[in-house]
Length: 294
Image 1 (cartoon, one colour):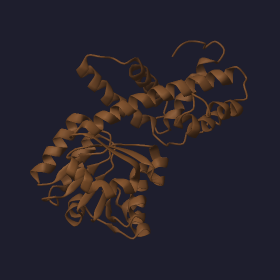
Image 2: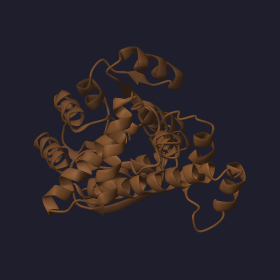
Image 3: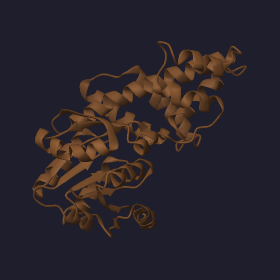
């Protein structure tokens, strides 16, 4: 199976490297052509001039872009190269309604569309330890499984088209709550003049232990917020969750609070930093004269 990958940002680049290592990757395309050219040469694959050419030359096309409009734009650009039996696997985080539009557009060309959002961040993309939440035809997902397993440690079909994104929405709400709890608790501990390195080592082995504490705890204490998962992207994802919740007539406090906090961080110019940049706001709560709720 010849595989092409569209979108070579932090996540796409890592997935491309994993696919190349599995000897599955044949071609790449990126809006910034120089980025594609450099990576293609490094991986020994083709850098296509446009998405349609990549789709024509490949049996399965992986998309890794940022937003709903990007997915639909890329899919439209691929139309000339899509055909019967080809598979489009979208690893982006987008709305369920966009998935249904994309699936129909792919079907109009005789192709299949799988919504396959991922969790695990940049580290997971580079190490091949992502978790894939797949929605779509079961037989098609099974055909795509060798490709999915090359980038992920776990692949689960959660239902029909759109259900992968619904599962990702649940994941993003949970990540928001964990981010809030870890950042707030560590800022609290720091204000108590605890040895926070020792505290993190202690907590990681108990009931409060989690991936975020393990991978971001010490970097937050050092004031390092290099992007693993950008604040701006989680803001976008939670905005999708908020729209889904509006449809259910429900407002979840953790979603509303985190969106408000992220908006403040975006306004302060921290949108390109990791979501652990939330720690900045939590620390500020404990500054003399600013002991108030966010």
